[in-house]
Length: 264
Ligand SMILES: C[S@@+](CC[C@H](N)C(=O)[O-])C[C@H]1O[C@@H](n2cnc3c(N)ncnc32)[C@H](O)[C@@H]1O
Image (cartoon, rainbow, N blue to C red; front, top):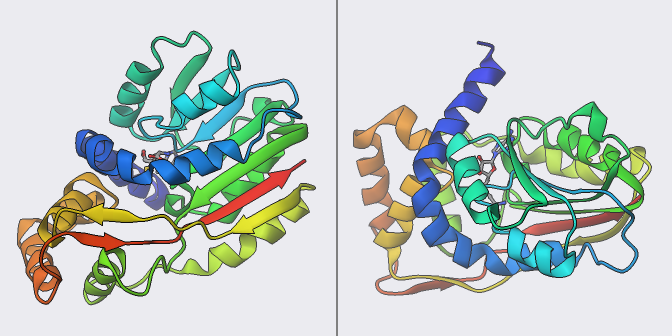
């Protein structure tokens, strides 16, 4: 296995283990961003062809997509077999919806120039080369097709549980290189699509308390692969550091994501 394949396998395993907790904890909290991503596709001028949903997880995008584009073929793609199973359950009553298990970084060349839209929420920042991935997603669009991608930037807030967990983890793990985010608009433009919106949508989110947030984030969210790799003793230390000085009781915050909308 190459280093990249190993990294993807670890990520897939982490999300396999996280799926039930992710669906119950994060899917409702992330819903406003999902709705914004789907609405940005717009229905009126969309060409024929399927809508691709790379990094679909449990496919929470489905209801809004079906409402916006009834009868349209929808194809979810996700790396995690556990996520794919849950997404297929969600899609079971919609005959035009399918879910593929695999790496969404590079789309099948047979998709090139054939799709009406690409909608992706909170997956791009996890990919090995996000700028290359968004280029591949843009290449899938037909003339008039639209891309709507929401992702977490390296800084989502200055204060709040996301900022605090990033700070605590940063004491133990070197930060990733977030410079790829600067290459996204140039990557899209080079692919011949027009970037219509580059926004930073921010919505309120709340957590019952700091401990509940930490446990959900580590067991049912993006930190699961790190927790698996470093073990329980590490997670225990991180938890103690996170909780020390964290506010008591309900914790409300307003993280901001980044939303790119483009048209071919
Ligand atoms: C935070 S979840 C987002 C899921 C869903 N779009 C949502 O908004 O709730 C991120 C998803 O990206 C998937 N993912 C990560 N890397 C991937 C890759 N290289 N190819 C396909 N999916 C990937 C994970 O398996 C996980 O299901």
